[in-house]
Image (cartoon, rainbow, N blue to C red; front, side, top):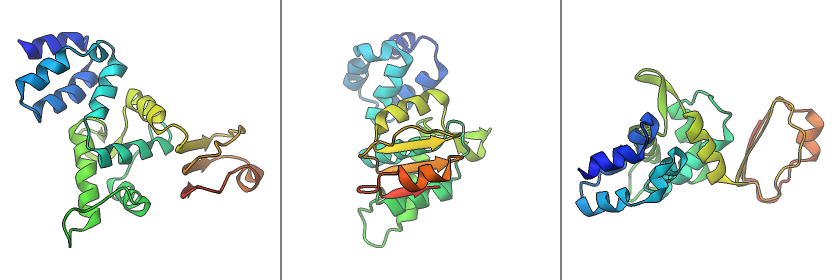
Length: 187
């Protein structure tokens, strides 16, 4: 009964149903389900996606927010993405001797399982982010992650940490990019 009430709140959105459903599936506690049902956040698709995002592990959330540097509908290679996460220090190991790439792949698999990343073609690599989730992750990342592409000519946030630049004028790259806290620049 509680599950049906939650489903009704999600207004037939397959994406919201998958993301919320995954969080419910791994938490078979009736009190958690009741609390979920009573959340007004689930009345809107973006609210349901936000709720699902908040229930991801902190490191997984950080890795997903980093994905906002990639353009909408960009295909993502798991190995490449995991290597970036490891290089940025987003992946941590609780056990000595555990390979960071294996931990990062676990984060990636969790995002796939939670429907935050999906295969482009059925069940095979590469992967992509659903447009609504890309909107969410862009908001979540704020100015930490910034993307300048397709001739963009605005101002860069002064507190940007991760930057993606593609198809922009060369003088933009050399003069306007703030450097103080920037940790990653994808050109």
